[in-house]
Amino acid sequence: MSRDELPIGRRVAGWRVRRSMTQQMFADRLRRSKSWVDKIERGVRPLDRYSVIQEVAGVLRVDPEVLLGQSSSSSPAGTPVGLDDIRAALARYDTPHAPPQTHELRRQVGHAGLAYQHAHYPQLMRAVPGLLDAAQGARSTKELVQAYRTTALLLVKLGEADLGWLAADRAMGAAGDDPLLAATAAVAVAQALRASGRDRLALSATLTAAHRVMPPPQQNGDQEVCGAFGDQSRRKPLGHRGEGGGEGVHR
Image 1 (cartoon, helix red, strand yellow):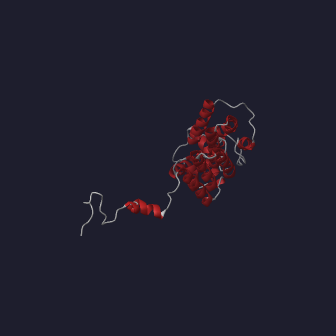
Image 2 (cartoon, helix red, strand yellow; image 1 turned 120 degrees about the vertical axis):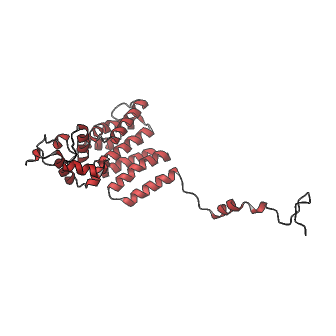
Image 3 (cartoon, helix red, strand yellow; image 1 turned 60 degrees about the vertical axis):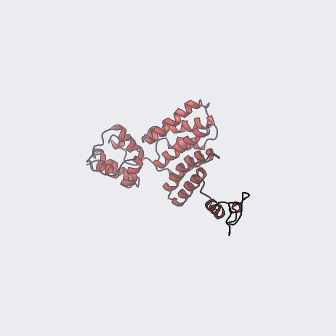
């Protein structure tokens, strides 16, 4: 049986193995169950919706036509389509276009976030370079952080952890002293570090951001004692007689 005659599930399995992903890793990136992946690869469950095929192809970094057997290419694409444009956008420090209005930029950032949530990765790859240019030009801190964060999460999903780390680090830098924005960016930093095999650094980055949002309680023994027993200096001696003369303890 030639490659083009293989069932689509077999093609998915073959490309998954080439991308060095287990079924569980593949399922996590698709936000589906391992059982779903297993059934697709064995042909038990049909893969006939083009939107789902696009999602699968995006994670595998191939064109949907390759999975459909409409391409004779037998070698993996070395670079996902659009990756070079994203890399160029991250390397730019000037803005080639006039910045959009804030409400328009907010709409673009929200649309990119939804595209990521629904695993529309090829579509998002095409949109990210323009989104980064727009966010950098608008000088809107919140939208800039969100744009970098979405870019970082996308790159991690596509197996480009180091480039994702760069985008996440840009998000942290843009967040500045805002603890909530920094915590938002830290999620992307942690995911990029984990994808790079740096689990300890990922945990450290997450805890640091969490402590900026909610600092850990101070362990002050003296304050705890005073809080539990009150200010002892204000208490009257047991035998003290008040001015009225009737409150003390008489022998």
